[in-house]
Image (cartoon, rainbow, N blue to C red):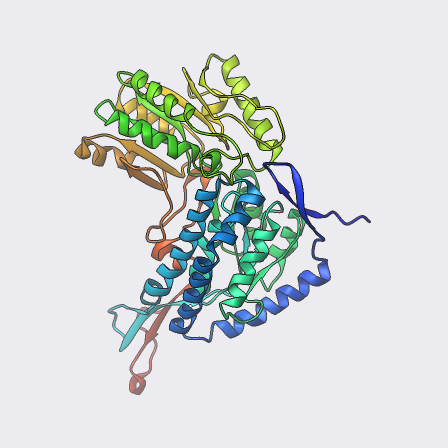
Length: 469
């Protein structure tokens, strides 16, 4: 039987950069065993000592920022300045958990009738991470520092189009002094995931990816009674009320939609604008999008690189065509330039209704849909009329009204007068078909722990608790 290669392809040129032979089942078994043994050793190391390894990982990320950013740009097409920011953010996550994490993992005393009682946070063991390509470093470093600090080990099955990034990440943790194999990268295809989930040495699963893949992984993990964190698709609303600072909102909208060439789960995708300012917003937003530069992502003046794969571009073209056929209007962009690379000129569509493809489906690329709403209540209703619930932005100068509207917005995060972004200090995740569980913050740190209740009675008077079952 032929062995399918894992290819690293430059999406800006369509050239194959490197090829890798996937790990064999025997190699996978050996790697998982090594990781399992490393995790058993790691959990016995004091949290403060684990934190030192996170600091070393951060130092390596900062020292090798240029090389790692170039690797990201070459392998998945991210504009170089954004790739550098991704490396910086990954280092920040390591530093945040190294400094703040030990206190968050301390035993929490609880007053009961016992002599002493507390809640402890013990590691689960080995976590399987199935990660996507769009933020090849950050997606992994969003999960790895808290998981490792909590005493777990990690097995990474990264997206097959970023194998060199996947190997570089494992190398960083190894050089940071972690036990050999504690963080293990497996070069395998998606067909290897079911066996990994079923492996008794794997204790939990985290996945960032599509809703369809997340549903399948959740079913497999649930069958084996293994906890999961799922960060899935999104169609984030960007609500602009009539009293908003419209020029500021329109300027922010360009970054909110077009960062990473629009390839982000938490990109703003549906721009829901009160009808009295929709024309003003659309004109300013479209002008900002039209001013973006498409091209070689290594050029400093380029703000829109290629899409990571040809199929992503084909999907966008199809979604735009179906939407215009239904009555939407392309205000700017929406064309495929000549030449190599998976490029797409960023587009803004207006006269969009909630049932059109660009509003009802997740658009994973530089396409923005502007939807008009008659008032704030209808804007929130339109925002919620989706199967997704990851993030949402609300633009208004009336902060008291914002406080009243926020509880009714169905999303894992709401940002007022700002762009939705992940932050190591805040929990991150979604609801509905955007997944469940949380990464980042204290909640993310404890996500892969056994939240253990400890009740200690007086040694001289041991007896059953009077309310015991």
